[in-house]
Amino acid sequence: MELGNVTRGSSEPVGEFSMRGKMNTVRGAAKIVAHIQNAKVAEQLERLLLTIQGMIQVAKDRCPELGEIPPLHAHIDEDGSALVEWVFPEFRVGFNLEPNPADSGWHLVSNKRLQDLTASGQLANMEAIVPMLVDFILPNV
Image (cartoon, rainbow, N blue to C red; front, side, top):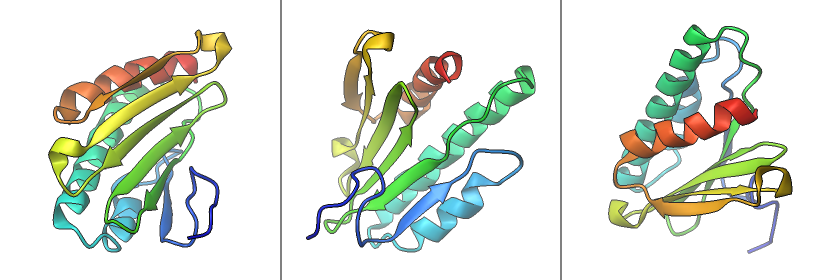
């Protein structure tokens, strides 16, 4: 397999889900979900995107002057797993969705300006993890 940009992947189907303006991230995710052969990975991706979309919408409703949120990037790997990443100038947040949901996880890595933070863990409780990460993301956009 040819190495490519880790965030964008290489020859496998790649998708972007824009959080900008009024674009519906679920509609964009449906295009990627159709390429995922493992139903458990597809289900996790749909749940993740719905959770993220809900959190961002609440944040935008509370704070209309909230700046642009960069698009999410997704990569479907040959083993059926999916990597979803948000890449910001100062940090990146990612989610690896595995065929066995117990193996799915998340990560956050930042630069020196944000004190070289690195954190990761299991994604078992997505509804608790995503709000925590969004709470980190919004003030640092």
